[in-house]
Image (cartoon, rainbow, N blue to C red; front, side, top):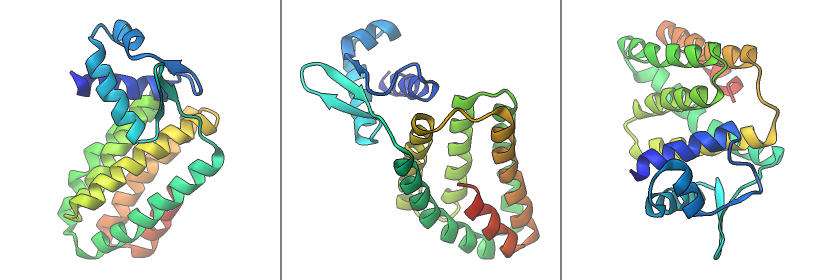
Length: 197
């Protein structure tokens, strides 16, 4: 139940349904989702650990506000984690493995084509997680996943909503990256990974 509530709250944060700076009580959110307050509190504590909300004693949780600087810092961290990891994978992973990621890249294209910002954020996270999982480094995967969630949420708060064409262009970079990885074009891989954030 907590995981379902957590995903519903994440979607509400990404869609703007839960507004930055606003305070929400666990009982009120529980009524909205038709559950008891306990899974809501547990989910909100998880979101607090991810920096999405802040605990307000005796009142509930305030949706965190993020600045363009927050987005820039998280973008830098993502690049520091993913660029060397993907370049190392480009040198060692057999070509056949890249085809396994194509359905995930296509999922991002489909979400982007619908203009589904929340769906795009989730399919993008799944694609990047699958990419990092190829390293075999579980700590890198967990850290990358956390940073990815934070970056998407910050971007929603700090920048205007991307147009469908922007989402499509970003999603197309996943396909281009897989093409470059399949072809062993390390220069293109590095350019695409660095420019993706």
